[in-house]
Length: 469
Image 1: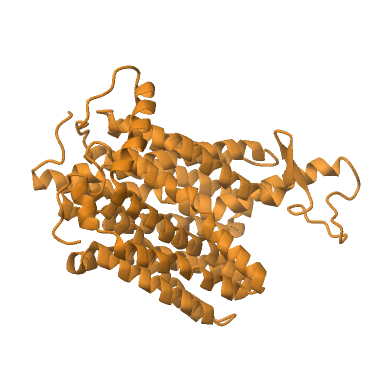
Image 2: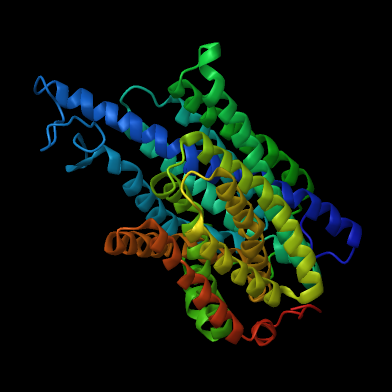
């Protein structure tokens, strides 16, 4: 049944909200297990084996570099559509390509979702589709890395589109004063789910050989269980969420044609809300810093601090579980100090954490674990409150479209932080200065956010202003 939103009945809203947070729990296994850990390691290894097998047919000593050393990831090339590149470069190119595809697809799906009275069915379709192809990555073995590329891109589309639709439910199921608590609770559940799934999968990696499961088989089982986890826990929000009547009337013509027209109208219309765009631009700066710290901390721990894989894996789990507590804490702080002030306080903590990272001594595990705890405290909460605040600044009936732009904007700008890190490391010869360079993203974000009048931004789009900002 399709009805108006959000409902005035608090009990109905609470029921939808309790179900909604479980999709964070369900989908976080994809960025945590598939992207951060197993995807990069396994698909790169499969590509390396393919390159080695291909060049072995052309000579007795394949893939020998100028220094005489054989390295299948650096010296062996693979080819796709006539392009040749080192096997070890596959993951970087794949992430870039998948991001471009998301930028093209996700906003269109968001525009269609906003014109549809069956948004829940769209969420189910993309979530289950993404989960299915994630399970299918378990079929990638031997040298068929091309299959892995296709499946990963499809899984990434399922993840990105379902996230944009999922975010768009926030204004439909929560009042202005409920959104901070809802968003931070969802983000916290996401880190808890990602951490639990990864912890179970890492048991196979660390102890699998004792039961006859090698690393390759453990990785394939991780893909299989990730897809099952994603699909299984998606059933919970689908049972509780309702379809809400779209505020705007559907355009004439096919849904796809109407989606293109609506997307174009949204991009033109967004210029009428410069304060919303100002906040979005500010968010994209500091979230790039957040993503860079999360993605580069393992490299910092490995290359600069000389920790082995077991320490790095433990660190990932610490971050995941502490981030659960951090998300809940941010929600409570926002009720006391307001959303904007809490985000700015969180950005200040990020600066302190990066300064402390500079002084962590090589080989000192407890110092590194404490640093991971500090990252976890602010990792989930900063983005969760930003998601909530952005939902207040979206014009009615445009939720999925604006969250699509929000989602792809994150990915489209995610290259800048790693670039700054790499350039600084190359120029100084030290990862310590490189990690310090990321402070700029949080400092700039803090200053810009200070000057964004969030109350005026909310009023400009015609939404009710929450009591605490």
